[in-house]
Amino acid sequence: MKSFYITTAIDYVNGSPHLGHAYEKVLTDVIARFRRLMGDRVHFLTGVDEHGQKVQQSARKRGIAPQAFCDEVSQEFRNLCTRLEVSNDDFIRTTEERHKKVVRAVLQQLFDKGEIYQAEYKGFYSTRQEQFLQEKDRNPDGSWPEIFGEVTEITESNYFFKLKAYQAWLVEFLTQNEDFVFPRYRQKQVLEFLKDPLNDLCISRPKERLEWGIPLPFDETYVTYVWFDALLNYYSAVADQPGVWPATYHVIGKDILVPPHAVYWPIMLHAAGLALPEHLLVHGWWLQSGAKMSKSTGNALNPLELVTEFGADAFRYFLIREMNVGQDSDFTREQFLVRYNSELANNLGNLVNRTLNMTTRFAAGAVPAGESGDELDESLRALWARTRDEFITLSEGFQFHTALERAMTFLTETNAYIEKRAPWKLGKSAEAKDQATLRASLATMAEALRLAASLLQAVIPGAAAKILAALDYTPGADWRAELAWDGRLAGRKVAAGLVLFPRPQAPEKAGGKPV
Ligand code: ME8
Image 1 (cartoon, rainbow, N blue to C red):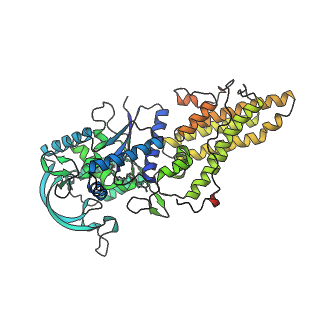
Image 2 (image 1 turned 120 degrees about the vertical axis):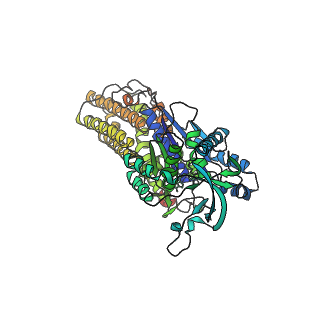
Image 3 (image 1 turned 180 degrees about the vertical axis):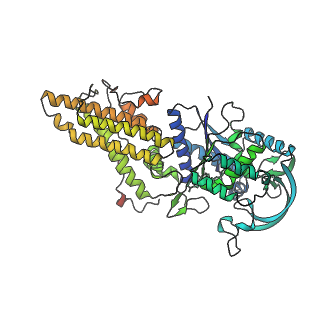
Protein backbone atom coordinates (compact mmCIF):
# COMPACT_ATOMS: atom_id res chain seq x y z
CA MET A 1 0.00 0.00 0.00
CA LYS A 2 1.36 3.43 -0.97
CA SER A 3 1.89 5.56 2.14
CA PHE A 4 -0.08 8.68 2.84
CA TYR A 5 3.06 10.77 3.03
CA ILE A 6 2.61 14.16 4.66
CA THR A 7 5.22 16.80 5.46
CA THR A 8 5.49 20.20 7.13
CA ALA A 9 7.80 22.92 5.90
CA ILE A 10 11.20 22.63 7.55
CA ASP A 11 11.68 25.57 9.91
CA TYR A 12 14.62 27.94 9.84
CA VAL A 13 16.68 27.52 12.95
CA ASN A 14 17.73 31.16 13.12
CA GLY A 15 15.34 31.68 16.04
CA SER A 16 13.13 29.83 18.49
CA PRO A 17 9.85 28.25 17.39
CA HIS A 18 6.79 30.50 17.41
CA LEU A 19 3.06 30.09 17.12
CA GLY A 20 3.12 29.83 13.29
CA HIS A 21 5.50 26.86 13.51
CA ALA A 22 3.42 25.26 16.23
CA TYR A 23 0.26 25.67 14.18
CA GLU A 24 1.72 24.06 11.08
CA LYS A 25 2.89 21.07 13.09
CA VAL A 26 -0.42 20.68 14.88
CA LEU A 27 -2.44 21.01 11.67
CA THR A 28 -0.26 18.42 9.95
CA ASP A 29 -0.48 16.18 12.99
CA VAL A 30 -4.27 16.35 13.05
CA ILE A 31 -4.36 15.31 9.40
CA ALA A 32 -1.82 12.52 10.00
CA ARG A 33 -3.73 11.20 13.00
CA PHE A 34 -7.04 11.47 11.16
CA ARG A 35 -5.67 9.54 8.17
CA ARG A 36 -4.28 6.84 10.46
CA LEU A 37 -7.72 6.51 12.05
CA MET A 38 -9.18 6.23 8.56
CA GLY A 39 -6.90 3.28 7.91
CA ASP A 40 -4.12 4.83 5.84
CA ARG A 41 -0.49 3.90 6.26
CA VAL A 42 0.82 7.34 7.18
CA HIS A 43 4.35 8.63 7.00
CA PHE A 44 4.71 12.03 8.65
CA LEU A 45 7.87 14.08 8.25
CA THR A 46 8.88 17.34 9.87
CA GLY A 47 12.26 18.92 10.46
CA VAL A 48 14.52 21.93 10.26
CA ASP A 49 16.22 24.01 7.59
CA GLU A 50 19.74 24.60 8.84
CA HIS A 51 21.78 26.13 6.04
CA GLY A 52 21.92 29.61 4.59
CA GLN A 53 22.90 33.12 5.39
CA LYS A 54 20.37 33.76 8.15
CA VAL A 55 21.60 30.81 10.16
CA GLN A 56 25.24 31.73 9.56
CA GLN A 57 24.52 35.29 10.74
CA SER A 58 22.61 34.17 13.83
CA ALA A 59 25.43 31.80 14.80
CA ARG A 60 27.97 34.60 14.36
CA LYS A 61 25.94 36.89 16.56
CA ARG A 62 26.06 34.25 19.27
CA GLY A 63 29.77 33.74 18.68
CA ILE A 64 29.48 30.01 18.10
CA ALA A 65 30.04 27.68 15.14
CA PRO A 66 27.01 27.25 12.85
CA GLN A 67 26.79 23.52 13.53
CA ALA A 68 26.78 24.03 17.30
CA PHE A 69 24.16 26.74 16.87
CA CYS A 70 22.00 24.43 14.74
CA ASP A 71 22.34 21.58 17.21
CA GLU A 72 21.01 23.82 19.94
CA VAL A 73 18.07 25.39 18.10
CA SER A 74 17.08 22.15 16.34
CA GLN A 75 16.59 20.64 19.74
CA GLU A 76 14.05 23.35 20.55
CA PHE A 77 12.04 22.39 17.47
CA ARG A 78 12.21 18.71 18.42
CA ASN A 79 11.05 19.57 21.93
CA LEU A 80 8.19 21.57 20.47
CA CYS A 81 6.98 18.47 18.64
CA THR A 82 7.14 16.39 21.78
CA ARG A 83 5.37 18.98 23.90
CA LEU A 84 2.61 19.36 21.32
CA GLU A 85 2.14 15.59 21.06
CA VAL A 86 3.00 15.71 17.38
CA SER A 87 3.16 12.15 16.04
CA ASN A 88 5.83 12.64 13.35
CA ASP A 89 7.52 9.45 12.15
CA ASP A 90 10.73 11.21 11.21
CA PHE A 91 12.53 14.50 11.85
CA ILE A 92 15.02 15.67 9.28
CA ARG A 93 17.84 18.16 9.62
CA THR A 94 19.40 19.44 6.42
CA THR A 95 22.87 19.08 7.94
CA GLU A 96 22.43 15.31 8.14
CA GLU A 97 24.49 13.19 5.77
CA ARG A 98 21.44 11.35 4.38
CA HIS A 99 20.14 14.70 3.14
CA LYS A 100 23.41 16.14 1.83
CA LYS A 101 24.06 12.93 -0.09
CA VAL A 102 20.77 13.25 -1.99
CA VAL A 103 21.23 16.98 -2.66
CA ARG A 104 24.66 16.34 -4.15
CA ALA A 105 23.37 13.44 -6.25
CA VAL A 106 20.47 15.47 -7.66
CA LEU A 107 22.74 18.43 -8.42
CA GLN A 108 25.25 16.21 -10.18
CA GLN A 109 22.53 14.53 -12.19
CA LEU A 110 21.05 17.86 -13.31
CA PHE A 111 24.52 19.19 -14.11
CA ASP A 112 25.36 16.11 -16.19
CA LYS A 113 22.07 16.47 -18.08
CA GLY A 114 22.90 20.08 -18.93
CA GLU A 115 20.12 21.52 -16.75
CA ILE A 116 22.63 23.60 -14.80
CA TYR A 117 25.04 26.09 -16.39
CA GLN A 118 27.50 28.75 -15.24
CA ALA A 119 27.08 32.45 -16.04
CA GLU A 120 28.01 35.91 -14.91
CA TYR A 121 25.31 37.60 -12.92
CA LYS A 122 24.88 41.21 -12.01
CA GLY A 123 21.97 42.16 -9.88
CA PHE A 124 20.40 43.40 -6.68
CA TYR A 125 20.59 41.03 -3.78
CA SER A 126 18.54 40.88 -0.57
CA THR A 127 20.47 39.38 2.30
CA ARG A 128 17.38 38.98 4.43
CA GLN A 129 15.50 37.00 1.78
CA GLU A 130 18.67 35.44 0.37
CA GLN A 131 17.57 36.12 -3.17
CA PHE A 132 18.43 38.20 -6.17
CA LEU A 133 15.73 40.76 -6.89
CA GLN A 134 14.19 41.87 -10.11
CA GLU A 135 13.01 45.25 -11.31
CA LYS A 136 9.40 44.17 -10.80
CA ASP A 137 10.10 43.61 -7.10
CA ARG A 138 10.55 47.37 -6.57
CA ASN A 139 7.94 49.62 -5.00
CA PRO A 140 6.20 51.97 -7.46
CA ASP A 141 8.50 54.78 -6.22
CA GLY A 142 11.60 52.73 -7.13
CA SER A 143 12.59 51.82 -3.56
CA TRP A 144 12.78 48.22 -2.36
CA PRO A 145 10.00 46.86 -0.16
CA GLU A 146 10.82 46.50 3.57
CA ILE A 147 10.68 42.74 3.54
CA PHE A 148 13.93 42.62 1.56
CA GLY A 149 15.94 44.42 4.26
CA GLU A 150 19.25 45.77 2.99
CA VAL A 151 19.57 45.48 -0.81
CA THR A 152 22.99 45.65 -2.51
CA GLU A 153 24.10 45.42 -6.14
CA ILE A 154 26.56 42.62 -6.80
CA THR A 155 28.26 40.94 -9.76
CA GLU A 156 29.35 37.35 -9.54
CA SER A 157 29.76 34.20 -11.51
CA ASN A 158 27.17 31.62 -10.49
CA TYR A 159 25.41 28.42 -11.46
CA PHE A 160 21.91 28.56 -12.84
CA PHE A 161 19.16 25.98 -13.07
CA LYS A 162 17.14 26.11 -16.31
CA LEU A 163 13.80 27.02 -14.81
CA LYS A 164 12.60 28.99 -17.81
CA ALA A 165 12.71 25.96 -20.10
CA TYR A 166 10.00 24.31 -17.98
CA GLN A 167 7.55 27.19 -17.68
CA ALA A 168 5.19 25.95 -20.37
CA TRP A 169 5.30 22.44 -18.95
CA LEU A 170 4.41 23.74 -15.46
CA VAL A 171 1.48 25.80 -16.74
CA GLU A 172 0.20 22.75 -18.57
CA PHE A 173 0.64 20.58 -15.48
CA LEU A 174 -1.29 23.02 -13.28
CA THR A 175 -4.03 23.36 -15.84
CA GLN A 176 -4.39 19.57 -15.98
CA ASN A 177 -4.23 19.17 -12.19
CA GLU A 178 -6.67 21.71 -10.84
CA ASP A 179 -6.52 20.43 -7.30
CA PHE A 180 -2.73 20.39 -7.00
CA VAL A 181 -2.93 23.30 -4.56
CA PHE A 182 -5.47 23.46 -1.74
CA PRO A 183 -7.33 25.78 -1.38
CA ARG A 184 -8.02 26.17 -5.08
CA TYR A 185 -7.87 29.94 -5.10
CA ARG A 186 -4.19 29.64 -4.26
CA GLN A 187 -3.59 27.62 -7.43
CA LYS A 188 -4.95 30.57 -9.37
CA GLN A 189 -2.27 32.75 -7.75
CA VAL A 190 0.37 30.37 -9.03
CA LEU A 191 -0.97 30.59 -12.58
CA GLU A 192 -1.15 34.35 -12.23
CA PHE A 193 2.54 34.38 -11.25
CA LEU A 194 3.37 32.23 -14.27
CA LYS A 195 1.92 34.81 -16.64
CA ASP A 196 5.25 36.64 -16.43
CA PRO A 197 8.30 34.95 -17.93
CA LEU A 198 10.41 33.01 -15.42
CA ASN A 199 14.11 33.61 -14.99
CA ASP A 200 16.53 30.75 -14.54
CA LEU A 201 17.25 30.11 -10.88
CA CYS A 202 20.60 30.99 -9.38
CA ILE A 203 21.38 27.93 -7.28
CA SER A 204 24.89 28.70 -6.07
CA ARG A 205 26.51 31.08 -3.62
CA PRO A 206 30.26 31.72 -3.76
CA LYS A 207 31.94 30.43 -0.63
CA GLU A 208 33.52 33.82 0.07
CA ARG A 209 30.01 35.19 0.59
CA LEU A 210 28.43 32.17 2.26
CA GLU A 211 30.20 29.20 3.79
CA TRP A 212 27.30 27.55 5.53
CA GLY A 213 25.79 25.31 2.90
CA ILE A 214 26.23 22.14 0.89
CA PRO A 215 29.19 22.44 -1.53
CA LEU A 216 28.25 21.95 -5.19
CA PRO A 217 29.53 18.52 -6.19
CA PHE A 218 30.88 19.85 -9.51
CA ASP A 219 32.45 23.05 -8.11
CA GLU A 220 33.44 23.09 -4.46
CA THR A 221 34.10 26.83 -4.46
CA TYR A 222 30.34 27.30 -4.21
CA VAL A 223 27.63 26.20 -1.80
CA THR A 224 24.06 25.38 -2.77
CA TYR A 225 21.34 28.03 -2.58
CA VAL A 226 19.39 27.27 0.60
CA TRP A 227 15.99 26.78 -1.08
CA PHE A 228 17.34 24.26 -3.59
CA ASP A 229 18.84 22.38 -0.66
CA ALA A 230 15.81 22.72 1.65
CA LEU A 231 13.11 21.62 -0.80
CA LEU A 232 14.92 18.35 -1.38
CA ASN A 233 14.40 17.37 2.29
CA TYR A 234 10.98 15.93 1.45
CA TYR A 235 12.60 13.48 -0.92
CA SER A 236 15.94 12.88 0.81
CA ALA A 237 14.25 11.74 4.02
CA VAL A 238 12.48 8.87 2.25
CA ALA A 239 14.66 8.26 -0.81
CA ASP A 240 15.62 4.81 0.46
CA GLN A 241 12.14 3.85 1.68
CA PRO A 242 10.05 2.11 -0.98
CA GLY A 243 6.37 3.07 -1.27
CA VAL A 244 6.64 6.48 0.37
CA TRP A 245 7.61 9.02 -2.32
CA PRO A 246 5.83 10.99 -3.77
CA ALA A 247 4.34 13.06 -0.97
CA THR A 248 0.57 13.11 -0.69
CA TYR A 249 0.55 16.56 0.94
CA HIS A 250 3.19 19.17 1.59
CA VAL A 251 1.70 21.42 4.29
CA ILE A 252 3.12 24.95 4.00
CA GLY A 253 2.28 28.56 4.81
CA LYS A 254 1.09 30.94 2.10
CA ASP A 255 4.39 32.87 2.08
CA ILE A 256 6.33 29.93 0.67
CA LEU A 257 3.95 28.77 -2.05
CA VAL A 258 5.13 31.03 -4.88
CA PRO A 259 7.73 30.59 -6.11
CA PRO A 260 9.49 27.92 -4.01
CA HIS A 261 6.90 25.15 -3.60
CA ALA A 262 4.70 25.75 -6.62
CA VAL A 263 7.39 26.69 -9.15
CA TYR A 264 10.93 25.63 -8.17
CA TRP A 265 9.98 22.34 -6.56
CA PRO A 266 7.81 20.79 -9.31
CA ILE A 267 10.35 21.85 -11.92
CA MET A 268 13.28 20.46 -9.93
CA LEU A 269 11.53 17.11 -9.58
CA HIS A 270 10.40 16.97 -13.18
CA ALA A 271 13.87 17.85 -14.48
CA ALA A 272 15.38 15.15 -12.26
CA GLY A 273 12.86 12.57 -13.47
CA LEU A 274 11.20 12.22 -10.06
CA ALA A 275 7.47 12.00 -9.35
CA LEU A 276 5.69 15.19 -8.26
CA PRO A 277 3.90 15.52 -4.91
CA GLU A 278 0.16 14.99 -5.19
CA HIS A 279 -0.87 18.19 -3.38
CA LEU A 280 0.29 21.31 -1.61
CA LEU A 281 -1.86 22.30 1.35
CA VAL A 282 -1.46 25.99 2.00
CA HIS A 283 -2.45 27.53 5.32
CA GLY A 284 -2.73 31.18 6.26
CA TRP A 285 -0.97 33.15 8.95
CA TRP A 286 -1.50 33.69 12.60
CA LEU A 287 -1.56 37.41 13.09
CA GLN A 288 -1.33 39.60 16.11
CA SER A 289 -3.28 42.80 15.69
CA GLY A 290 -3.15 42.26 11.93
CA ALA A 291 0.63 41.74 11.59
CA LYS A 292 2.28 38.42 10.76
CA MET A 293 3.95 36.86 13.72
CA SER A 294 7.54 36.28 12.85
CA LYS A 295 11.00 36.08 14.25
CA SER A 296 12.17 39.19 12.46
CA THR A 297 9.33 41.46 13.63
CA GLY A 298 9.74 40.39 17.25
CA ASN A 299 6.04 39.87 17.96
CA ALA A 300 6.36 36.11 17.95
CA LEU A 301 4.49 34.31 20.68
CA ASN A 302 6.27 31.48 22.41
CA PRO A 303 3.86 28.56 22.00
CA LEU A 304 5.45 26.58 24.79
CA GLU A 305 4.33 29.12 27.38
CA LEU A 306 0.71 28.52 26.43
CA VAL A 307 1.23 24.77 26.44
CA THR A 308 2.72 25.01 29.94
CA GLU A 309 -0.19 27.11 31.12
CA PHE A 310 -3.10 25.23 29.51
CA GLY A 311 -1.78 21.87 28.32
CA ALA A 312 -1.17 20.54 24.82
CA ASP A 313 -4.77 19.49 24.19
CA ALA A 314 -6.26 22.91 24.91
CA PHE A 315 -3.63 24.58 22.77
CA ARG A 316 -4.12 22.17 19.87
CA TYR A 317 -7.87 22.46 20.16
CA PHE A 318 -7.77 26.24 19.96
CA LEU A 319 -5.52 26.38 16.90
CA ILE A 320 -7.62 23.90 14.96
CA ARG A 321 -10.98 25.27 16.12
CA GLU A 322 -10.11 28.88 15.43
CA MET A 323 -8.36 28.73 12.07
CA ASN A 324 -10.19 28.17 8.80
CA VAL A 325 -7.43 26.34 6.89
CA GLY A 326 -6.15 28.63 4.16
CA GLN A 327 -7.22 31.91 5.76
CA ASP A 328 -5.53 34.12 8.34
CA SER A 329 -6.54 34.35 12.00
CA ASP A 330 -5.83 36.80 14.74
CA PHE A 331 -4.47 35.33 17.92
CA THR A 332 -5.67 36.87 21.14
CA ARG A 333 -5.43 35.53 24.61
CA GLU A 334 -9.02 36.66 25.21
CA GLN A 335 -10.35 34.51 22.38
CA PHE A 336 -8.23 31.60 23.58
CA LEU A 337 -9.81 31.92 27.02
CA VAL A 338 -13.33 32.23 25.62
CA ARG A 339 -12.98 28.94 23.76
CA TYR A 340 -11.14 27.27 26.60
CA ASN A 341 -13.85 28.18 29.10
CA SER A 342 -16.94 27.62 27.03
CA GLU A 343 -15.97 24.69 24.80
CA LEU A 344 -13.41 22.72 26.77
CA ALA A 345 -14.04 23.43 30.48
CA ASN A 346 -17.80 24.02 30.41
CA ASN A 347 -18.90 21.78 27.58
CA LEU A 348 -16.57 18.79 27.28
CA GLY A 349 -15.19 19.04 30.83
CA ASN A 350 -18.66 19.27 32.26
CA LEU A 351 -19.87 16.19 30.41
CA VAL A 352 -16.84 14.26 31.63
CA ASN A 353 -17.42 15.26 35.25
CA ARG A 354 -21.13 14.64 35.23
CA THR A 355 -20.89 11.27 33.52
CA LEU A 356 -18.14 9.90 35.70
CA ASN A 357 -19.45 11.35 38.95
CA MET A 358 -23.08 10.41 38.41
CA THR A 359 -22.20 6.88 37.35
CA THR A 360 -20.18 6.58 40.54
CA ARG A 361 -22.92 8.05 42.67
CA PHE A 362 -26.03 6.43 41.21
CA ALA A 363 -24.76 3.14 39.73
CA ALA A 364 -21.92 2.19 42.06
CA GLY A 365 -19.43 3.17 39.36
CA ALA A 366 -20.55 0.63 36.74
CA VAL A 367 -22.05 1.78 33.43
CA PRO A 368 -25.61 0.36 33.36
CA ALA A 369 -26.83 -1.74 30.45
CA GLY A 370 -29.65 -0.76 28.13
CA GLU A 371 -31.14 2.51 27.06
CA SER A 372 -34.66 3.78 27.01
CA GLY A 373 -36.00 4.08 23.52
CA ASP A 374 -37.84 7.34 24.09
CA GLU A 375 -37.74 10.42 21.95
CA LEU A 376 -34.99 12.12 23.92
CA ASP A 377 -32.60 9.23 23.38
CA GLU A 378 -33.67 8.79 19.79
CA SER A 379 -32.94 12.38 18.91
CA LEU A 380 -29.52 12.32 20.61
CA ARG A 381 -28.61 9.17 18.68
CA ALA A 382 -29.80 10.72 15.45
CA LEU A 383 -27.72 13.81 16.18
CA TRP A 384 -24.73 11.58 16.82
CA ALA A 385 -25.09 9.82 13.47
CA ARG A 386 -25.20 13.18 11.69
CA THR A 387 -22.32 14.61 13.72
CA ARG A 388 -20.08 11.63 13.03
CA ASP A 389 -20.74 11.63 9.28
CA GLU A 390 -20.33 15.37 8.94
CA PHE A 391 -17.22 15.39 11.10
CA ILE A 392 -15.56 12.84 8.83
CA THR A 393 -16.59 14.55 5.60
CA LEU A 394 -15.51 17.96 6.87
CA SER A 395 -12.17 16.58 8.10
CA GLU A 396 -11.51 14.93 4.76
CA GLY A 397 -11.87 18.39 3.22
CA PHE A 398 -9.67 20.03 5.93
CA GLN A 399 -12.64 21.95 7.34
CA PHE A 400 -11.58 21.07 10.85
CA HIS A 401 -12.91 24.25 12.43
CA THR A 402 -16.43 23.37 11.29
CA ALA A 403 -15.96 19.69 12.16
CA LEU A 404 -15.12 20.76 15.73
CA GLU A 405 -18.10 23.07 15.81
CA ARG A 406 -20.32 20.07 15.00
CA ALA A 407 -18.66 18.02 17.74
CA MET A 408 -19.30 20.88 20.17
CA THR A 409 -22.98 20.94 19.21
CA PHE A 410 -23.19 17.25 20.00
CA LEU A 411 -21.60 17.87 23.42
CA THR A 412 -23.94 20.79 24.10
CA GLU A 413 -26.94 18.64 23.24
CA THR A 414 -25.66 15.82 25.43
CA ASN A 415 -25.35 18.24 28.33
CA ALA A 416 -28.87 19.46 27.55
CA TYR A 417 -30.02 15.83 27.63
CA ILE A 418 -28.61 15.52 31.13
CA GLU A 419 -30.44 18.68 32.22
CA LYS A 420 -33.70 17.29 30.89
CA ARG A 421 -33.23 13.87 32.47
CA ALA A 422 -31.98 15.33 35.74
CA PRO A 423 -30.43 12.12 37.08
CA TRP A 424 -30.03 13.84 40.47
CA LYS A 425 -33.86 13.91 40.74
CA LEU A 426 -34.35 10.39 39.39
CA GLY A 427 -31.81 9.17 41.93
CA LYS A 428 -34.05 10.34 44.77
CA SER A 429 -37.08 8.43 43.49
CA ALA A 430 -37.77 4.86 44.61
CA GLU A 431 -40.13 4.17 41.70
CA ALA A 432 -39.05 1.38 39.34
CA LYS A 433 -39.81 3.50 36.26
CA ASP A 434 -37.56 6.33 37.45
CA GLN A 435 -34.82 3.91 38.33
CA ALA A 436 -35.00 2.41 34.83
CA THR A 437 -34.84 5.89 33.27
CA LEU A 438 -31.89 6.73 35.50
CA ARG A 439 -29.98 3.64 34.37
CA ALA A 440 -30.82 4.32 30.74
CA SER A 441 -29.71 7.96 31.07
CA LEU A 442 -26.39 7.00 32.61
CA ALA A 443 -25.80 4.48 29.82
CA THR A 444 -26.58 7.15 27.22
CA MET A 445 -24.26 9.67 28.85
CA ALA A 446 -21.37 7.21 28.99
CA GLU A 447 -21.88 6.15 25.39
CA ALA A 448 -22.11 9.74 24.16
CA LEU A 449 -18.92 10.57 26.03
CA ARG A 450 -17.08 7.55 24.63
CA LEU A 451 -18.12 8.46 21.10
CA ALA A 452 -17.21 12.14 21.47
CA ALA A 453 -13.78 11.21 22.84
CA SER A 454 -13.22 8.77 19.97
CA LEU A 455 -14.25 11.38 17.45
CA LEU A 456 -11.93 14.03 18.90
CA GLN A 457 -8.85 11.81 19.16
CA ALA A 458 -6.92 13.40 16.32
CA VAL A 459 -7.28 16.90 17.77
CA ILE A 460 -7.00 16.27 21.52
CA PRO A 461 -5.21 12.92 21.71
CA GLY A 462 -4.18 13.22 25.37
CA ALA A 463 -7.59 14.20 26.71
CA ALA A 464 -9.38 11.64 24.53
CA ALA A 465 -7.14 8.85 25.83
CA LYS A 466 -7.75 9.94 29.43
CA ILE A 467 -11.51 9.97 28.93
CA LEU A 468 -11.51 6.51 27.38
CA ALA A 469 -9.29 5.21 30.16
CA ALA A 470 -11.63 6.69 32.79
CA LEU A 471 -14.44 4.76 31.09
CA ASP A 472 -12.28 1.64 31.39
CA TYR A 473 -12.33 1.34 27.63
CA THR A 474 -9.60 0.44 25.15
CA PRO A 475 -10.55 1.35 21.57
CA GLY A 476 -10.16 -1.19 18.81
CA ALA A 477 -8.18 -0.75 15.61
CA ASP A 478 -11.14 -0.02 13.33
CA TRP A 479 -12.05 3.59 13.97
CA ARG A 480 -15.27 3.59 11.96
CA ALA A 481 -16.47 0.63 14.01
CA GLU A 482 -15.54 2.57 17.15
CA LEU A 483 -17.93 5.30 16.11
CA ALA A 484 -21.02 3.08 16.23
CA TRP A 485 -23.49 3.79 19.05
CA ASP A 486 -24.02 0.33 20.50
CA GLY A 487 -23.83 0.54 24.26
CA ARG A 488 -20.60 -1.42 24.48
CA LEU A 489 -19.65 0.13 27.82
CA ALA A 490 -22.24 -1.83 29.83
CA GLY A 491 -20.66 -3.13 33.02
CA ARG A 492 -17.47 -1.05 32.77
CA LYS A 493 -16.18 0.40 36.04
CA VAL A 494 -15.58 4.11 35.60
CA ALA A 495 -13.06 6.21 37.51
CA ALA A 496 -14.49 9.47 38.89
CA GLY A 497 -12.50 12.62 39.57
CA LEU A 498 -10.92 13.27 36.17
CA VAL A 499 -10.29 17.00 35.76
CA LEU A 500 -9.19 17.65 32.18
CA PHE A 501 -9.56 21.38 31.80
CA PRO A 502 -9.30 23.24 35.09
CA ARG A 503 -10.92 26.62 34.82
CA PRO A 504 -8.49 29.44 34.25
CA GLN A 505 -8.99 33.04 35.32
CA ALA A 506 -11.97 34.81 33.85
CA PRO A 507 -10.95 36.66 30.65
CA GLU A 508 -11.52 40.11 32.18
CA LYS A 509 -9.08 39.31 34.97
CA ALA A 510 -6.52 37.91 32.58
CA GLY A 511 -5.48 41.32 31.27
CA GLY A 512 -1.96 42.45 31.86
CA LYS A 513 -0.45 39.16 30.80
CA PRO A 514 1.44 39.52 27.56
CA VAL A 515 -0.11 37.50 24.75
O1 ME8 B 1 10.04 29.37 5.35
N1 ME8 B 1 1.46 31.88 10.87
O2 ME8 B 1 10.94 28.52 7.30
P1 ME8 B 1 10.17 29.42 8.40
C1 ME8 B 1 1.39 30.67 10.27
N2 ME8 B 1 12.76 27.23 6.00
N3 ME8 B 1 2.44 30.05 9.73
C2 ME8 B 1 3.62 30.65 9.79
C3 ME8 B 1 3.79 31.92 10.41
C4 ME8 B 1 2.63 32.53 10.97
N4 ME8 B 1 2.66 33.69 11.58
N5 ME8 B 1 5.10 32.26 10.29
C5 ME8 B 1 5.72 31.24 9.65
C6 ME8 B 1 10.81 28.64 5.95
N6 ME8 B 1 4.83 30.28 9.34
C7 ME8 B 1 11.70 27.70 5.17
C8 ME8 B 1 10.84 26.56 4.64
S1 ME8 B 1 10.50 24.26 3.32
C9 ME8 B 1 11.40 23.36 2.24
C10 ME8 B 1 11.59 25.54 3.81
C11 ME8 B 1 5.09 29.03 8.59
O3 ME8 B 1 10.75 28.98 9.70
C12 ME8 B 1 5.65 29.34 7.21
O4 ME8 B 1 4.62 29.72 6.33
O5 ME8 B 1 10.25 30.86 8.05
C13 ME8 B 1 6.30 28.03 6.86
O6 ME8 B 1 5.37 27.15 6.27
C14 ME8 B 1 6.77 27.51 8.22
O7 ME8 B 1 6.09 28.28 9.21
C15 ME8 B 1 8.26 27.64 8.41
O8 ME8 B 1 8.66 28.98 8.27
